[in-house]
Length: 144
Image: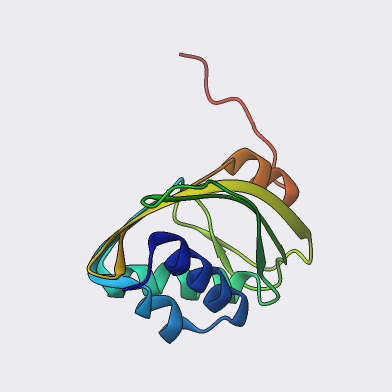
């Protein structure tokens, strides 16, 4: 059975190939994928998350630059790069068209496994860093 590290490495390879079938093969059917953008439960929701990412950033590439030496969970620091040319869902539910802007996003993730597949996968990155790179700015809300 593959280790958590082997599974996370296989997931990164599948992401870089934009191969949704291989991405899902890394996850248990009832896996949970947690990101700052939300929680996806099960293959259908996880597939939607990755499809959306691949459409928004067709040249998406993820590179691990630090891997913690432990059995499970597999903990990895990475850099995600891509060019925003497709529709991207915003926190308020609206979609923004491609901006043509290049992103370089630093993040960390931890995935736990069960029966040779990822059961929980937690990605952490700075949403403000992502949105600023896409050209969005913070605006203060109405005074309380």
